[in-house]
Length: 613
Image (tube, rainbow, N blue to C red):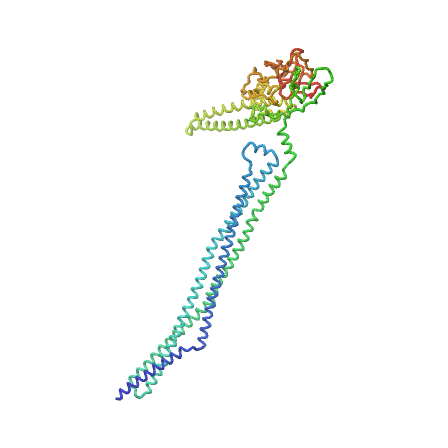
């Protein structure tokens, strides 16, 4: 009966113990404001603040990276603008560059055209400087910033990764500390309850010794667990405090310092790029200045007077002005006469007096031949013809130079083949050497032909000059041949008295374009003076001077007269610009001879008195 009762009290005690535990648990759930909990709340707030700082820094550094990307895009677009501008400038310069034709040679004679061409060349160099700007912007800024952006993003990612990792670690340590603290608190409460239960069991006389001993052992075990939990909590608390100190005083400040350094480097890099952006333009300014100076110099080199003189030289005909028109007295019952130099046509429905040549308006007559003209340029005025012939001679000499250079090169090659037969067959060069020799011979013949025509033109012009008579390269070796050729060609005057400058120009004068390099001394002009000019029934012309034959002239054609070298004759009609002079041997023999074959001395009172040699 006693045991049963004892067992009943044990059950009651157990029930009371359970009820007490529940009450204590309810008390634990109620909020308390202990100093430790206040410390925990402060720590939690500090952690929240640290996380917020990371968020702010993350947003700011991301904005900094976006700014660098925006500036890099700006530099790229500026570079593209420079490239497009340079391309447009080059196209503009190319568009107005002179074309490779004969017109370019004409334009290059004028200073204002040369200045414009120089401006175009300088403008092309100016465009090149803008290409240099684009290239430097791309290489020194865009490429460098692109690479730096990759490095910046990687560095930023590393720093924030380290920060997040440190934050996670301290939060994990905090959770472990919290767990140790709660375990220590629970073990302490369990030890207190076990101690109270033991004391209660020990004070109860109805409880057996075994139950008391069991309660005592349980209390001791709980006290031991509480002691162990206390040790663990104390140890981990020290560890957490050390880690927390390192976190807030070392790790996080270091990460923030790295982010700050990264941000300062980014800003410094942007500043350096902006400086380079200006320096790229500054570097090309000296060359741009030289281009502009070149344009200015070209503009200042324009010479209006020289250019106008070029026009005069280009279109100067070389003709002498006509003499005064004589007074024709219609009140006298005498035969009407007409001056040799009259600008009017003497034959207007009437018979022309014997010995009177057709009046000619040389400077005012337009050339009907709009084509290329004869080979000797006889369709041109004397001065223009001389320039054309001289230009043709110069071109032929250039061709001869080229052929001779090829001949010399092939000759050296042949010598090498002769000394070293394994390098090639010497005879393989002979056909080409023969061809070049033939080409040189033909070109030399052409030079002699054109030099003969040039000599005739210069002899006919009032102002004689031998400065352009010979080309220089073949002056010595071709003097004799040219002299003989000229003497023979003088049997073929450049044009008849009604030659290529009259409105009724006869196309037969172009037959002389097929002249051979070795002329026939018996060749006679194909166009002769009008038959009406040799009417022997009219009154003979008066003598206006004398002349001396420099070369023999056979005079086979009708209207001409044969003369011997050194013969003295009377001049009765001077050259009208067609290359013929009318002379008289005696009262019965008169006719035309080439002006270039005689030396003329006109009387001082004669019209247009001049001396022709």
